[in-house]
Structures are given as C-alpha cells and as structure tokens.
Image 1 (tube, rainbow, N blue to C red):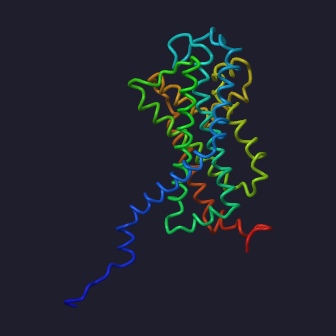
Image 2: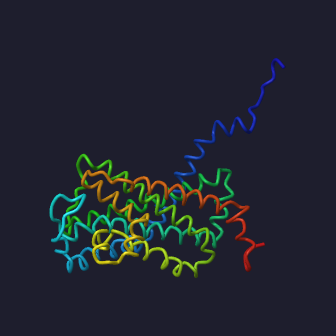
Image 3: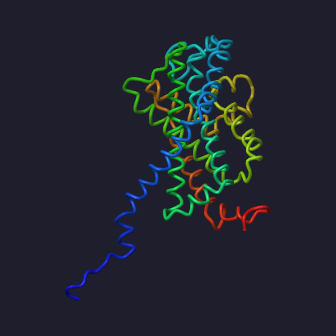
Length: 290
C-alpha cells in the first residue's frame, strides 16, 4: 500500500551482502593463519632447514650427475643443485600443505573448526578460505627458500618474461598440495594418527617423483615400477610444471594434471566435510562429543 515501506527479504539481503561478507570471511581466515604463523618462528626455520640441507649437502655429492645427457627443459649442462631446486621448492609446498592438515585436525580437536563450519557461509567457501591461507603460507616459505638458495649460490631463472608462468605454476602447485592436505584432514581423526599417515603420503610422493632425479634416470636404471609411479604422481607434474616454466618451455600435460588433481581433492574434501557424511560423523565416534 501507498505510504508503507517494504523491507527487503532475507534472501534479497543475503544476495546483496553475501559476496562482501564472503570476502571478509576469507580475509579474516587468511589473516588469522598469517598471524599464527608469525608467532611460530620455529615453523619457518624448520621449513627452510630441510630443503637447504638437501641443497647444500646432498647436491654437493651429486653435483656432476648430469654430465651424460641433456634433456628438456635444459639446453645445456646444469649442476645438480640447479636441477633439484624446483623439486626442493615443491618440497616446501608439500610439507606446508601437509602441515596445514595437521592444523585442521588440531583445530577440529579443540573445537575451533566446528565453530568455523557453523558460520552462515557455504562450507566449500570456508574450506576454500582455509586452502587459500595454506597456499599463501606455502608461497611465502617457498620465496624465503629461493632467497636463501640464491644467497648460497644457486641461481634460478625466475625473473624475466617467464615470471608470470612461474608464479602460476607455484600457485597451482601450492593449491593442489593444500587441497590434498585438506582431504587428508577429513580422514585423520586424531592427532596421534597424523605422523603415521604422513609417512605414507609425504615420503612416497616426494621420493617417487622427479624432484631428485629425472624420469629417464629411473627408466635407464631399470626401476620400472618406480618409474611408472613417478609418471603418474601428481607431485611430479607440479615440479615439472614449475621446472619447465622457469625456462619458458611447454610443460605438456602437467598443468592439466595439477589442476585436475586440485579440483578432485577439493571436491572430495568438501564432500567429506559435509555434516551428513564426513565431518558430521566425527561427533559420533567413541569418545566424541554427543
């Protein structure tokens, strides 16, 4: 009627304010993770010590291992430390992605994750926010590793026309490994089970890949079953995408495999955290809250 003010419906209000609120929630989650990381000085040190030991010690013993053949993406002979550097960047991304799953399990045990998942936002968006925070932390740690590696004499072709491609490969790899950690957090019920689960994920993914040795070396040595696993290992393709991007070469199918793995892992994690399926069943386990 004339003279009356019609108040907007909740649906209209949600449509108007949903996106700003969603972005605000993502910023808050990312900021929380960054602030928490800023108070954990040992976490950055441990993230750098592991790959730097490989670079400074392991690479020193195999510095001339590539004197036999030159394969793509390299056009000339390279020392071993230059070869494994993309794999060590991948190691930083891999370990932080797995560390994020530990944080998810801890938050779930302490009740913080339960509170977060009750927020009036789509659950996939909340999980995407957690994944974004994980990727940001992974990339910051990878940047710190690259700087220290450069200081000790390992030069990587990161700056130039190929820089946007390198950044894209690094971001995609960080998101893929973070999504894998997110998926694992669905199935790790208690913190005590984390170490055993990680030993069956981190080490096989890392050692059965091209992070430390090229595929042709595996095939040439006769380790056919390791060669086949490395071919289909998503971590291999994350490392190879980054390696080829550094030299401005075509990475082939690697980007599609990385992005496909990212989509599958994130979709499976979102399904697993559905209260009617995965996460909701956690409260029904023995010893869980009623």
